[in-house]
Amino acid sequence: MRLAREVPYPAEQVRSITLLCEGGRLFLDLTAEVPVAVYPPGQEPDPARMAGVDVGIIHPYAVAGPGGEGLLVSGRAIRAEHRMHLADTKARRRAVARRAPKPGQKGSRRWRKYRRRARLVEGRHRRRVRQAQHEAARSVVFWAVGQRVGVLHVGDPRGVLDIAAGRRHHLRLRQWQIGRLLQVLTDKATLAGITVHLVDERGTSSTCPACHRRMPKPRGRTLSCPHCSFSGHRDLVAAASIATRTPGGGPTTPTAVVLPKVVEHRRAGRHLPGAGRSRRDPRRPPRAARESVGPRRPAPPPNGESLAQQARIHNTHRKPGER
Image 1 (cartoon, rainbow, N blue to C red):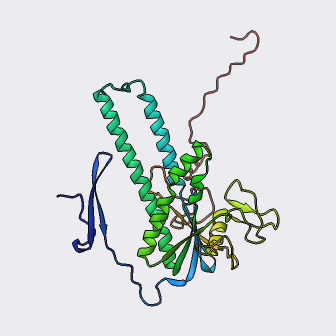
Image 2 (image 1 turned 180 degrees about the vertical axis):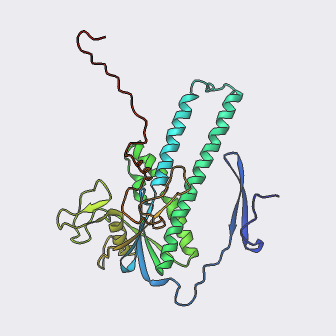
Image 3 (image 1 turned 120 degrees about the horizontal axis):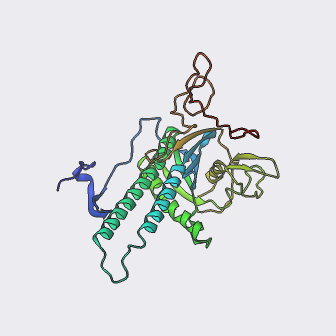
């Protein structure tokens, strides 16, 4: 059987092969036995170093590690991909609504071509989102390996799936794909030799880490406590509180919450359409002077005149007696 590319695993490591069809395309789903990563002495993950991970929509993963280090993975490109795909699907269905066959009626050739195109677009959308989720989890694991983190305490937010909050909020939760985010992060962390524990995250985004009192939900990403004037990033505060939780226990925090002081920013879904460079991306080339992020304007000519075409001014206000 000819494949588009070679199997990335040796034949003796392959355990199962499944033939899949998605969007009119055939795929081979391979399950292989892969050994856990081996590190040089002194560079392996330390089980005594723990980090907390907060799972969200705007930031799929917010990590608060030891030593005041933090990581924020932006998922705004993934959310934009979901929104643009929904708008495109609604517009496409609205355009062909009059040509849709009635129940029991055989569809025309044009209708079959439309359905085939819709399946291709749906498959492409799922592949884009899946790749972005893997990129986000890989960023977290690479950062944890660099910090020698041996244990990840991940907040489990799947309790919100049982809350009846309306169809709009249910659509957000469905596009969030909480279970897949947790599974992808667990698989990649296990291969890297990092232990993952799911803990209760209830109250981490609404409890002040300084005075331990309830706070109102903020409108943006900045969390401000009205009782002790504490201020910090909402997701990082939740991740720092999750790091102190014990697996299988209640929301007690036996140790003090350590907030990150140095935060790294990463973006998931840089391959998505319209996802450009970020102002906070550390891989962005630095500029010599502080100026606008947009393209530079051309220099004015020596005589001081503008390069734009001169506008024609039509005088429509005539005095009495003038033609």
